[in-house]
Each structure stands twice: as structure tokens, then as C-alpha cells.
Length: 99
Image (cartoon, rainbow, N blue to C red; front, side):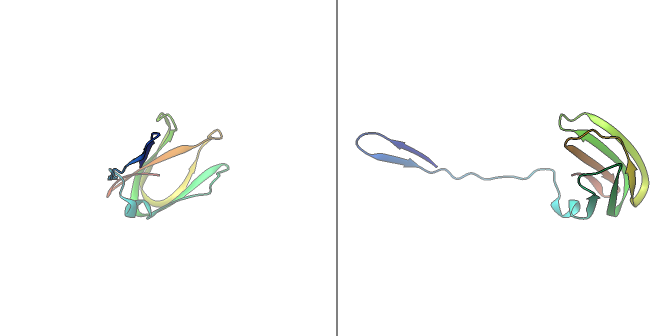
């Protein structure tokens, strides 16, 4: 809402905005568990779907590490990540998901 005021009156303008969610299937990401947070020496994952590959990206979108998980539904990834935030790209048989 935008409100403009002058000495004589107050004008109010209301605009309706629609938000569209694109490319993220929230029901699918709820079936992937990634822990612990924060991690120490390895990251564990569990998924209802077979996971073919996990790609870890930094906040600038650069690939930090890429691991072939050979269709497993759970496992551990040993990696040496510096302190920070990362995105996890899971490539599953049912699609690809970002966490």
C-alpha cells in the first residue's frame, strides 16, 4: 500500500499483487532430509526417492562438490566445507530438488 499526503488531503492507493512459486515442488523437498546443521565432517541424507547425485553449491552458485550417490535413498557425504551457507541440488529419479 502506498500512502501519499499533501496539505489538503491524504490519498491512498492499494494494489493487489499475486505471488507465483516457480520450480519448487515443496511436497518433494519435504521427502528429503539433510542433517546435521551445522555439519562437522560429514552430511547425512535420507530420501523417499532414489538419489542419483548430490551437487553442493555456494551462495554465488559455484559448484563446491559433486557426488554420485548411485541411486541410494540414504547415506553420508564426507566433505571439507568452509563455514558458510550452501545449496544442495538433489538429482533424483523423480526430478531435481534444491534445498
